[in-house]
Length: 500
Image 1 (cartoon, rainbow, N blue to C red):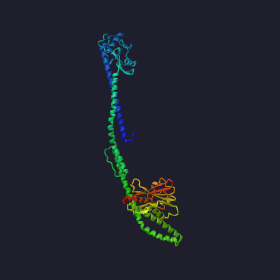
Image 2: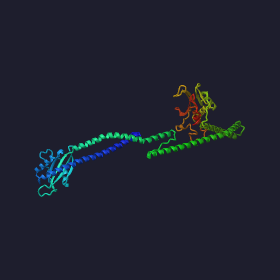
Image 3: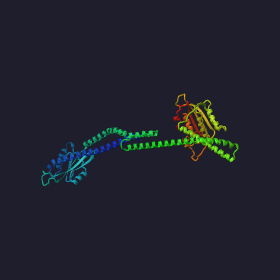
Image 4: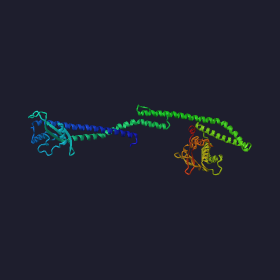
């Protein structure tokens, strides 16, 4: 079965054309064949009747056998090009043929019975040795010139039979079949041209719909198709345009809602920042009193709990502010050239992850120097290492290597940093959502130490550097985050790099 719609349309058109031509040819052949046979039959009956009307008046009644022989001999000689052979029977007597006849005419018994029953001329087509033949049975009536008491027009009891070949007619019919077959192939070839033209016209709207759907899929929601005609394809085009309009409206509404949500989060974070700063300052003082033993035990525990929750709230607000800056395209890079090992080691020590020994293993060569924003790369590394310690298992191994950038000039290299933990890894259904904002793998876990924005901020910081951040499960077990940063950095576009 052809797979292409155009090929199927052409094949279907040709099949319909061939079937129509076949049916037309069959009907024409049948009518032509009947016309040829009927013409020959009518002509033969007319000729035989004319000969009987000419010869029968001279035949004495009742005729003797010799009279019948002479009579049939005259009829055989009058056959002309038709070359019929005749026989005569008087009052259901035996068939009498002309003297010297080598092969008597083949007169079917059914023909003789039919002539006896109907009393008129009867014809019957037969086959002898594979060749078609026609047999005629014609009663002879008394003629006006016949002597005696006979009434003119009354059946005389004499029946004449004639039989001849239809080979000439068969040749005409065969020629007709040959001509039909010879014309079928050119007709099909000629039918291919309108078939291709029709397929092109039918598929033109379909191709337009396909191109329009591809543009819609690529984000061109303003795509509309011209509507021409009033057929089913034009209805489909109108439906496509309606669908595109609905998608465009829904997309605009979603973008508006998203912008509103981001603006709301940014406003809330901004408004909370100042009072939280004051609360953090107060809780730091109270922490010192709680740890010094100046407060009762229950009061000290409550103060420490409030201080801890306040610090979490401060981190969340700071993360929201950071995300807001990325969304607004206001995030900026402050580049500096630093040693990568120094940067990683500093991140580990500042978070207190260097103890116990071996919790975080740093395998970064000393000679790799990078030109990055140290604060942002520190945030990225802290999120990756902290994620491995919280959700994976120690030791968390940080490795780095300097490679040639694939497909780029020799002057451009890439730094690849991998952070691998030794936990159970990340479920396959969670992997695609690891970097989503506020995504929680376990929906039942409504609260955690993080804000749910750490890995999303890490991705944005990486993009700001023109790099990429991916995650996969390590073949040896555990999750493995891969940070890739090109060196030197490509020109930074704040509008492009700051938006997610």
